[in-house]
Image 1 (cartoon, helix red, strand yellow):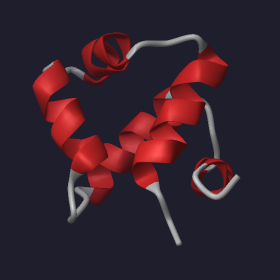
Image 2 (cartoon, helix red, strand yellow):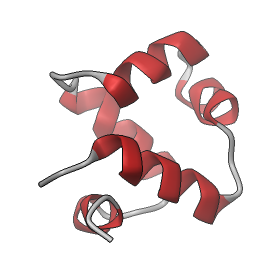
Image 3 (tube, helix red, strand yellow):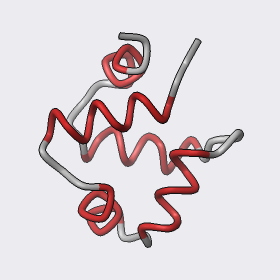
Length: 67
């Protein structure tokens, strides 16, 4: 099962970034990023942008939540 929260946690750790830094890179508030991370329904465009900024392929990002 996909665990986006875990994927973000692992990805941010691997890249040495904080949620605030990623949010700033995306041009959104930390609160908006937190909502993306914890949402039941995901905004695909924002998720894709975050994955790109973290320098992962979508399949790699998804796998991070399954480890």
